[in-house]
Amino acid sequence: AGFTRLWPSVVFFAALIVSMGGLAVALKELPVGTAYAVWVGIGASIAIVYSFVSGQEAVSLAKVLFLLMIVGGIIGLKVVN
Image (cartoon, rainbow, N blue to C red; front, side, top):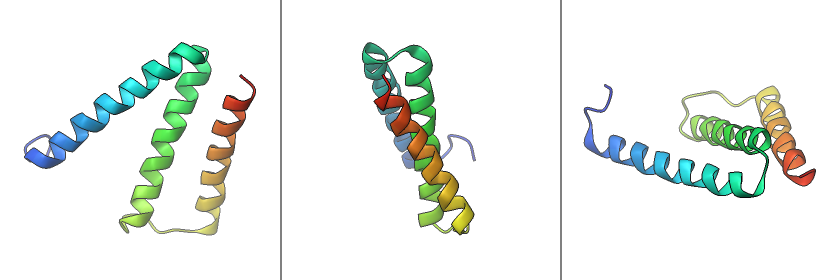
């Protein structure tokens, strides 16, 4: 449907602004590679959890374990910097 529906489009652009703002703040404290990896990992984790909660994707033990590995990697990257 693209951007033909108002409220989903508003939510998307608000989330985009918050996301880019978060990346900008992270870049002040972290190296570019680490900040970008953390930013992508957080975004991917949020998308996966949303798809689980909304019922768009089936939850399995393997998916949860891999999601936890992503989160662990994010934490690890932030800890070593």
